[in-house]
Image 1 (tube, helix red, strand yellow):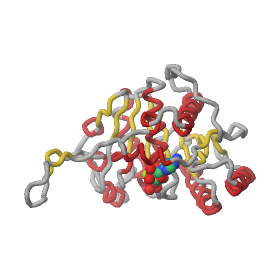
Image 2 (image 1 turned 60 degrees about the vertical axis):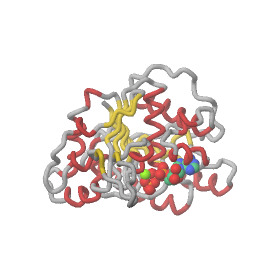
Image 3 (image 1 turned 120 degrees about the vertical axis):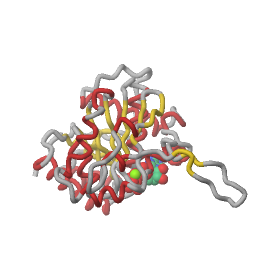
Image 4 (image 1 turned 90 degrees about the horizontal axis):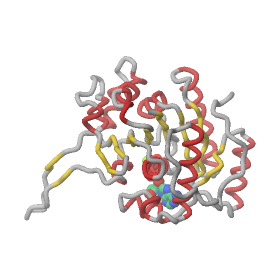
Length: 297
Ligand SMILES: Nc1ncnc2c1ncn2[C@@H]1O[C@H](COP(=O)(O)OP(=O)(O)OP(=O)(O)O)[C@@H](O)[C@H]1O
Ligand SMILES: [Mg+2]
């Protein structure tokens, strides 16, 4: 199993949408056994996959009660003490070759508790090792921070994708986050490849977006040759507990995620079948050189 982490310490850059859509395309189009892992206590990925506690219908006083509570990554990782549930036992089968390890708000206390543990950076890596033979690829969604959950994800991964909006504020934050990735590569996980920066909410017609991309290139940042545009369909799909790829397969953003998956399969040499239709030429694709996988100072 190869693990790809989708991370950026800035909020709202499209990490969850990227994780979900990439996972769905790898599973459906490439026939890979894909495990999604939600490491964000906000549980947005868990919600967009339609996984939630089962509640009874509201009674006459408007109250409902738990029928079945899902276990989450919090019970697997534990906190100051090791978790009491195995990774295998929390996974939810979403069908079509896709599984998820859900998150919930309890993961916020996990992050605090982990600080007291020995080998605190490797807790997720060890949990994933227990189920690795069952899956071809694992795609991990991270919270918008550089805390222990993000560090655990980066420690467990072979590759990282950093979704970022092409704006000046995002560039400043991005440079800081890249320093974190470099430290992880140097001190914890030398096998971690930096797949590249995925431009999100990108519009090739906007002058300030083009200027920001130039600034990023000048700063030597490896930008992926695929970008995701802004479209209400992506948000609508998440609201309908779907990826845009299944919600509106012909939509340009669905095609851009297909192109991203193709790139990931090629770069990581994943053993997927050839998809039924090759990705369409994308309007906002970026013609840039192959990015490097190891960041340099
Ligand atoms: N390409 C897109 N076009 C339009 N809306 C999008 C797109 N991608 C994501 N969104 C919407 O933008 C919001 C933020 O996206 P998303 O949740 O993927 O970002 P995030 O980086 O995971 O955020 P957070 O840092 O809070 O975890 C969500 O409401 C999502 O549905
Ligand atoms: Mg998110």
